Each structure stands twice: as C-alpha cells, then as structure tokens.
Image (cartoon, rainbow, N blue to C red; front, side):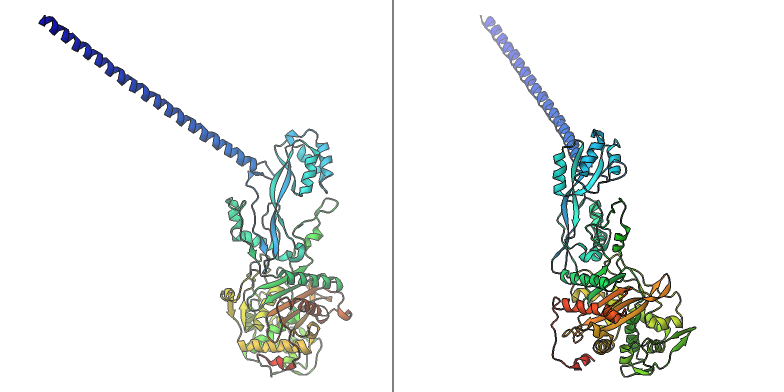
Length: 586
C-alpha cells in the first residue's frame, strides 16, 4: 500500500512537472510570437514613413516647378520667380519707385488648336501685338512660350473671358514710377525681369540686391526703402524749367542741378530730352524700336562732358587768389590781345585797359585770366584743377558718370585756353561740385544722391582752398550778380551770384561759329550761401531779347529755378539791405 502510494505520488510529481514544463514552453513561445509581430509593425511603419517622405519631396518639387517662372526666351527652362525691389523715396518720404503685382500671359503651344484664331482674339485685347512673332510661338510645338509680359488687370479679365484653351497667366512683379519722367535720369529703370539697368536702380543692384536675388532671398520680402537726397517738389520745378527753356530757346538740350554746399547732397538734377522709366523703350507703328525716343536715356549732366566756357574763370581766379599771386586789389593788364602758339587770345567785350580782379570777373576778360594762370604756372594749374576734382572721373552712386577730357600732355597754350574754359571738357555736375568748394569755406565734398547730414558727409570732405579764398570768391560771385552778367539770374531777396559761360559748341572736334553751349554757375543766397545751382543750354537758336548768349539763356533759367524753389528749400528772403552785404565774410 505504501509502495503503491509512493508510486502514485511520484507519478503525480512527474505529471505536474511535465505539465509545468509545457506551460513554460507555451509562455515562452507566446512572448516570441508577440516580439516578431511588433518588429514587423515597426518595419512596416518605417517603410510607410520613407514612402511618405519620398512622395512629399516629389510633391514639393512639383509645386516648386509649378510656381516657377519659365525663361522668356531661348530653350525652355525654369528660373526663380521675379524678385521684389525696395521702394525708392525722396528726402521727405515721397514715393519715387515701387513694385506692383502683375500677371504675364503664356501659351502651351502643344495644346493650341488654331493659332490663327488665337492671334486674332488676343490682338483685340492687346494693342500692338506682334502677329508674326506670336503666330510663330504658337506654332512652335514647344511646352511653353511667353506671349505678353506684365498685363493690366483689365487685359487679364478680357483674355479670360475669351476662353482660349492652352493659354494661362503667371504672377510677376513690375516697377512703377509714379512721377513718370520727373526724375528719370536719377532713378533709371529696370528690365522686364525687374533688374536695375540704369541710375539708382542699377546702383541698388550693385549694393547686393542682385546677389540676394540670385540666392532667392528677395521674393516676397519687404525691403527697407532707399531714401534719396532729392526733393521731389524741387526736382519737378527744375525739370519743368529746363524743358520750357529748351522749347523757348529752340535748343538741342538743356539741364540743371541744385547742390547743397554743406552736405554734398543733390537736391535736384534734370536733363532734357529725357524719357519715361515706366516705358524705357517705345515701339513705332511699323514695329521697330523708336531710336529717337531712346536718345532721352542720355544724361547730359553727369554722363556728358562739355567745354564749360567762362564759368571756368571762377576756378582760375580762385587758383590765383589761393596761390597768393593776386588779391582783390590787384591790377591785371588787359589792354592788348595775346599771341601764343600761333593763336590770338582776345576779349569778347574788351575794355582795352588794366582791370582790377573784380573787373576781370565782371567783364569776363580772357586776356587777364590767361595772365593770372601764367602767374601760377602750368604744373600748378593742372594740379589745382585735379585737386578740385575737375580732371578725374567723379565718384558718386550714379553709374552714368563720364570721364573728363584733357590734353594728353599739357603745354602752355593748353593752360592758357583751359583757364577760360576751352581746350578741356568736364561734366556739368562735377563743375557744380567744384564750385561748392568756392563758396562753402574751401571744402570739396563728394556728391551724393542719398540723403545725409553734415556729420555723415564729413568723411567725404577735404579742404582744398583756404577759407579766405572762399570768402573772396563769395565776394566776386556777389559782385557779378549785382553788376555783371549775373544780373539776369537775380531774384529780389535771394541774392543770386555767379558766372556766365558762353562757349562755341564743339562738333566733330571743331568749333562751330554759329552755335553755342551756354551755362550759368551760381550760388544763393549770397549773404549766407547754402546752394549751388548750375544750368546748361545746348545750341540755343534764340534767347531773351533774341540773343543766344548765356546771360540771355542760362541765367534766366537760374532765375526761374531760384524764384520757385528757394521758399521750398527754406531760404528766407532778405530785403531792405544795401550793397554792404557784399562784404559779409570778406
């Protein structure tokens, strides 16, 4: 019994152990199965994630291609969307240039069924549509072709109403100049892709905007406005005045500039003929580009050089005074013409007698001016004009700057003729810049088209004349404004002083006997000079009282400009004084 009981107990333990082992095996197998399933799920999740990333990448690329602006010419390709540009404003914050959101019309030639019908319908909406070129594009079989860039909203709506399959629109940015031609030579213009081609627009690109555009960092980005030095009100008056003078005096061209003599800021500058930067090029009815219109691109104030005539006597007398070879009480003999290098130098309105230095300036004596230059010497003469920046290319923001023309090797006859403004050519703008140094205490300040104050202009300033010389030149400008050729530029209360210049016009390297290039170089108000104003008039056929000289053409232009702009510039008129104010500062 005990044995049986013992045997039964052992069987029971074995059965229990076997059953336990089976449970252990079963539990272990269950855990292994769950682990494999989880691993499979993780792998599947990773695969799904990879597929999602791949599809999202492809989708983003397709969206990028869909929004990109195709190339307008050449092989079909893709480029970045047209970039935005900063607004340009005047010194008072008035808008001069801004971007506009526009659309451009394109075609998918492969989807065009009837090219003739499409051209006919589009021509009813788009004026001056080039039928031949448009038809050729539509029949090209290409994937993409531009048909018309920068449409108006009205044109877009009209084309949509036509319901033409195979054509569409792309968003673009266009440049708007609210003032039209008012400041065209300062602002410049952009191309169809909004890239600066001229003027301050080109300057802005050169300052890094082009690089930002290439990196795609200017799209839909609000850029800080570029604040210019010009006053839009003054600019408008200057342009209007020279345009009217060009017409009234039947001249080929005209121009003017107003410069702040203490900061070097250009307050206004205009040259006519000019152009509308909203329409840089113009098509003629025959489909060809209007070359006559494009002549308006040429800025005569900074990008052309002229023999400035007797205005240069201002610099010659300043040179003599600064060198100490003359003073205001000096007497220079101008009684007889000079013979030099086979040439005879004489006075246009000769007094045929010795002249005081103020008389030399007032009567514009060539003979006496040559003698003063000879006292200083040829080398010093050349060095002096170089110091005033009249013989080297001017540095400023505007890209369109011409290089002065001078003799390759200076000889005595060159020094003689240059002393009264013949035999070398410089730009009107740098003539005005150099003249500012004659009136502001002898400081040559690099000109700028960007707004700045005196402190900001200090690094661009250098002393080129003794302050005493500047005071003596203010006296001479005043004197001529009251008693000489400057009387034609005089405005009551604003005391305009200056010097006329009448030069024979140079045509193909020869002096014309019947055409002049006239200028007036002035400053105001002479009791406390703040501004230089320079006007030019090229080849006038008539003038005040029917005369073509500078005192009857260029000087009256200055008078009109000062009369209208001085109040806007904050210049207070001074009345009721006698001529003793001429000696202020001397």
